[in-house]
Length: 181
Image (cartoon, rainbow, N blue to C red):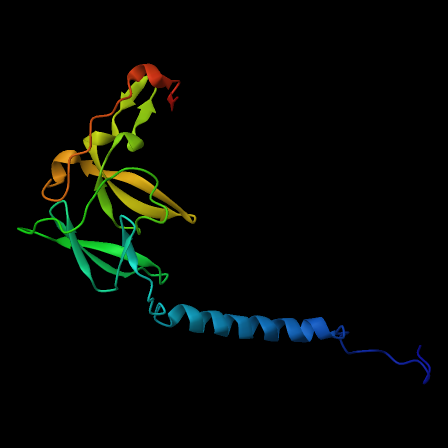
């Protein structure tokens, strides 16, 4: 059968663990603990000293302006960026000029609302939708500032010093396949 020089191996072969096999589980465990700690900690934005903009003028954090029958308080969003927060303004006259015209970059902070103007005109098929029929709010998406419709123009209280924007000068003949030309 077997000679004394031959032995029967009865142990199961276990492969030797390399450094990756030893380090990877430890690294994943540490990363998981770090991720768990980050996701369970309450989110706290760094206080921002950035002013909120309204028609190019800067307003301090905590300051309130009144426009269109609402109060807008300057604060910070979840990312620490300056933003207007809409609240009640019942019975208050407007304290800021609200032109509602043109590109908002460098003029308004997100959360500001404005009556629409011909700058907000757009087409649906061959039909012109005048921008003057809606109220618009400024929002940020992907680092870009855009006005979006948030309600009919009847939601806006026109009072001093705000003037109603002029009717659009465009017509449906400028709409070609849904594009304003």
